[in-house]
Image 1 (cartoon, rainbow, N blue to C red):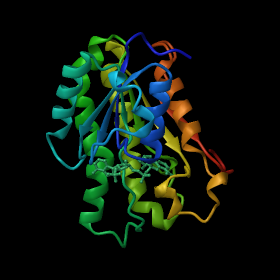
Image 2 (tube, helix red, strand yellow):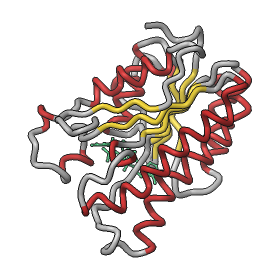
Image 3 (cartoon, rainbow, N blue to C red):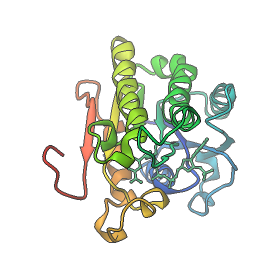
Image 4 (cartoon, rainbow, N blue to C red):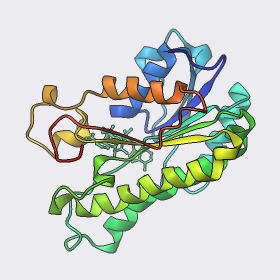
Length: 236
Ligand SMILES: NC(=O)c1ccc[n+]([C@@H]2O[C@H](COP(=O)([O-])OP(=O)(O)OC[C@H]3O[C@@H](n4cnc5c(N)ncnc54)[C@H](OP(=O)(O)O)[C@@H]3O)[C@@H](O)[C@H]2O)c1
């Protein structure tokens, strides 16, 4: 699997969990990476590769942060080939328990911020003729698995729609967008949601390899959605 020569990827929520693993895997496969973090810090795995790693303050709740990040990444690397909108939050409340603040918080981080990020990076993504966008959605964007996942699902269904909307808007310019839809992944987020042992959950390293594969596919192999699960369900 190869990445385009000199290719640059932006990864939000790269401080830990899936985002951290995706960034490390992309670097390993030859990408230059720009890491969006609430508290910017060079990860240990990046220490010998500072020429290909850029770290930037990025809070998904801060309108304007995405444009500052895109501008800084372009100033550093001169191009943006891929965007992995990974930062996300889960508030485990039913649609009856949740109040508007809960819904707004999840819509803000899981949907509105990735949309603004794609919009800010749009010109650069289109300029490559093969821009890639991965939206870290969820299987909760495909089905409502339980009452407690209802409010989160609301935001993740919208995140799946966002990926489809980006794919539709960018197809003629070579942009391909994928909604990546995992079930439980062994990170901090899942640790408080399931009692399944971590080694029986999808591993963030495996998801990182999937995302790197999706980013490396040619324009003629567009993948609109990619579902991945650690357990048996009827359709996933
Ligand atoms: N783990 C799962 O089972 C699972 C399953 C399906 C989908 N997902 C999705 O995958 C993505 C990554 O999840 P994860 O499991 O890696 O979660 P995680 O371990 O909880 O990490 C979440 C990441 O998002 C960042 N983040 C949260 N709020 C942010 C904000 N306002 N601005 C910027 N960054 C913010 C966190 O940064 P800080 O370190 O600063 O908090 C952290 O880097 C999310 O979109 C999640 O919904 C996860």
